[in-house]
Amino acid sequence: MTIRADLFFSFRSPYSYLAVGRYRAMTQEYDLDITLRTVLPIAIRDPGILFTGNPNVGRYIFIDAARSAQMLGIPYRWPRPDPVVQNLATREIAEEQPHIHRLCRMGQAATRQGKGLAFADEVSKVIWSGTIDDWHEGDHLAQATARAGLDFAELEAEAASDAEALDAEIAENQNALEAAGHWGVPTLVLDGEPFFGQDRIEMAKWRMEQKGLQKR
Image (tube, rainbow, N blue to C red; front, side, top):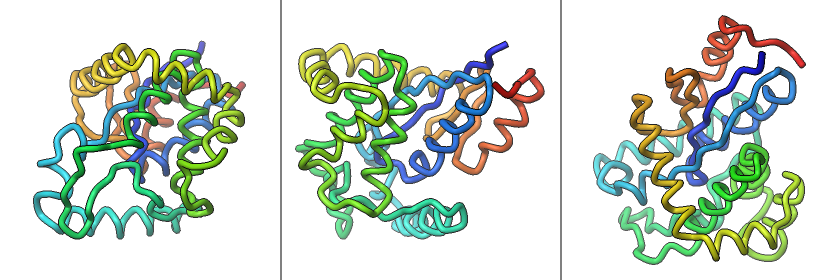
């Protein structure tokens, strides 16, 4: 029996990056289907929560994400450019956001084709691994999209032409995350039970095994 779950994910979340590849690897090893459900970053959805309140929040995320990546052996660096345009010194978030909406719409379009998890994994590596500057330029995203088994030109065209419907789907993803009992990412939801954080993957797998998770 195939185990099915949803992964709520943000392209601006370092913890989402640290989780998505490991969840993808699980789908390749086990009879497991994980649907990627893209949400807007908290910095866009509710900027009053993240980076604009207690300054220790931002500092802790920077420190903890880096050491988590080091512990896991996953290449990591804060993106250049940041998917969310923000002055990290003042914590002010710009009104114009040329990157994050494009990424989210493409992620949701990839989910429509059943390849959201692969797309998020490949694109996140380009953004977060520290091997590429200016990930938004040239053919970096096109190559990542191809590795996910998708056509970049088609995906980008869909993200542009069907932006309103994709935004509505992304908003519904956020509603579904909240209905499942959480607000942050990455959160895996299995039969209505949320598992928040890149450090809850083993616990999620444990629960899946209780439900009959089998190797392929």
